[in-house]
Image (cartoon, rainbow, N blue to C red; front, side, top):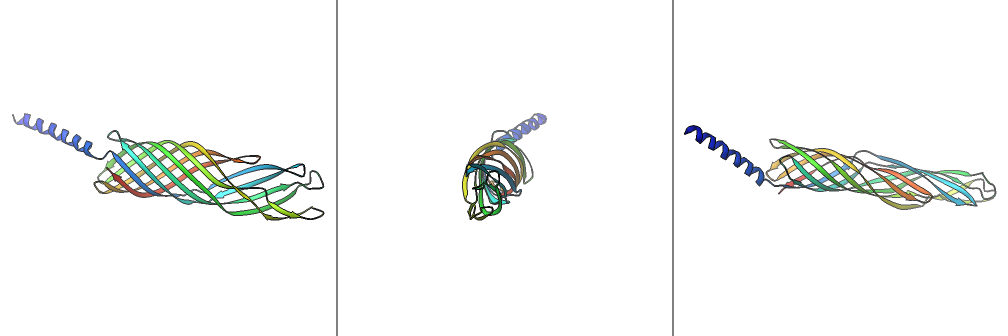
Amino acid sequence: MTRKIKVAFVIVSLFGAAASADEEGRLKLSLTGAFGVSSLDFSGTRTFTEFAEEGQVRADYSADKGPGFEGGLAYRFGSRLSVALTGSYLKRDSGASVQANLPHPLYLDRDRQVERDVSGLSYNETAGHLDLVLSGHSGSLDFSVFAGPSVFKVKTDLAGAPTYTQSYPFDEVNVTGVPTVSANDTAFGFNVGAGIDYRFKPKFAFGIQGRFSRGSAKLPAEGGEIEVDAGGFAVGAGIRINF
């Protein structure tokens, strides 16, 4: 009889633990302040026609590290598996070094070469990530690794052909400015990452994470297109709410 009572007690305890796990929140809301820790470099060459000849403008862009934000919702469908949908936004300050070959108004094949640095350009990146999340825990700590497809919306300023003044014999020009134009594109890619959460309340936690993402955007430009490797490595910290 005593043995049967012990077995019954173990079975009841197991069912109690399973019921407790099912009662835990299956949804987790994540609000994260992020920072893109890797700079972003890209370049592009475009052509134009002037004085019946083809001119060329090459711009080398450098986008700095920048702040961002992430918000996501995860649904737990197993003891260790979840699916998460996350949206992110990242803003970078950008600049460009512009080199241009300007056709000569009087002679063929005698381009005037000019250079100009451009600052104050903007680079904005919005992304959506759909991830499969594998998680575990130890005490008050929750661990997770995740991976999945991503979609990126890239919007940035691009440098155009320099404006200039000239006078006879037109062998030199005086650059007066470099106009800019906004360009955007949507790209598909992937992301992988990991995070650690510390539960300071049953439903609340503070978490840190790292995410690497990548997607190839092709920005339309007059006379060509400019390819940009969107994403990069970003770290973040924020609040997690389970419900």
